[in-house]
Amino acid sequence: MRLTKLFEDPKLEKAKANILDQIAGIDVTDENQIKLLDKIFRVLNSEQSNTTITAAFGPATADEEWSDKARQQHILNVAKIIHDVDTNYDSLMTFLKKLEQGNVLDVSVFGKKESNFNELLYADPVAIKVFESLQMYGKGQKRAGAGEFALAMLSPKIKMAPGEGDLVVNGVSTELKTETTAGGGRMGSGGPNRSDQIKVLQKYAEHIPELIEMFPDGSRGKSMLVGPFVDLLDKVLPVGGQSPAGGNNTQIRQALATDMMRLTFGDPYASAIGKTFGQPNKQLILNAMIVQNYEWYKARDSFELFVVLSFKSSRLTMIQNGQDMADAFANGSLNGGVGAFIHTGQASEVFGQMKSPKI
Image (cartoon, rainbow, N blue to C red; front, side):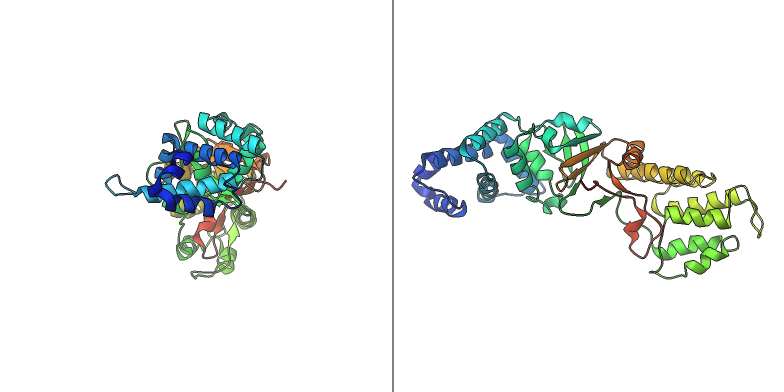
C-alpha cells in the first residue's frame, strides 16, 4: 500500500498516527519527507520484502494465521530503521531505487574466499549504513542469528531458509556465523560429558600415569587444548617408542585419540583425527582437527557454504570445506583454532572456535 493512499484512507487514521509518531523527526509539511516515506513503504510492501518478512517472523506452519497487523508492524519497524539512517534525501532515494531493483548486494562475493562490506554492497555508504542498522533485527526469531534478516531483506537472491535454518544464497544452503561487537562462534554445539573424557584417559592409565594425575575425575576441572596435550604425549608417549607398561606408543596414541574424538564426532571423523596422532607432527594433528571438525559440522547441519560475517571488522570469510577452514586459520583470515582435548565442564569447548582478526 502506498503511503499517500494510506494517509487518504479514513479507516486507517490510527495507522497514520502510528507512522508519524514512531518515525521521529518527520515533517509532514515537507514534500521530500512524504515522498521518501512513500517510497520506503512501497518497496517494503513488495512481494519480495513481504516474503522475507513472513519467512523471518511469520508462523512456523502455513495453516497458522498471521495477521496483516503483525506484518505491517514489521514493515513499520524496518521503515523506521531505513528512514533514520544518517544520510541525505537524494542518497537515500537512490538506495531505495536500488533496493526496489534488487541491486543493493553483490552476491558474487560469496563465491570468494574473502570479501568486505565495500565489495558486498557496491561501496554504497548508504547501503552499508542500512545493512549495519539492520544487523540485529530479527535475531532470535526462529533461532535466526544476527545479520540473517538484513542480508535477505537487501537481496532477492538471498532467502531465509525454511524452518529454523540460516540462509539460501543464490540457491546454496549457507550457515552464517555473525560477529557483532565481540567474540566469534564455534564449529558445533553440545559436546561430551567431561566424566566420559576422563574415563577414556583412565582406559590408558598404565601408559600415561602422569596425565591421569593432572586430570582427576569430576564433572568440572582442568582443561587442555589439543596442542598442549600433544606436547605432553610427545614427552610421555613419543611416537615410535615403547610404553614401559608394554605396547607400541604410536598405536596407543592413535587409539587414545580416536576413543576421545569419538565422544564428540563419531566416525569417520574420529578415526581420521586419531591416525594423525601416530605422526611426530603437531601441526598435522591440529590441521586434521580443524578439517574433520568442520566436515562433521557441515554434515550434521546440512549446509554447503559457511560464512563468517563480522560487523566489527566489516569482513566476510567464506568456507566450502575443511581444508578451506584450516587454510583460513593458517593465512590469518580467521583467528582461533582447535578446541579442547579435555574441557572444563563446558562441553562446547571441544569444538574449534573462529573469529575475524582485529583490524
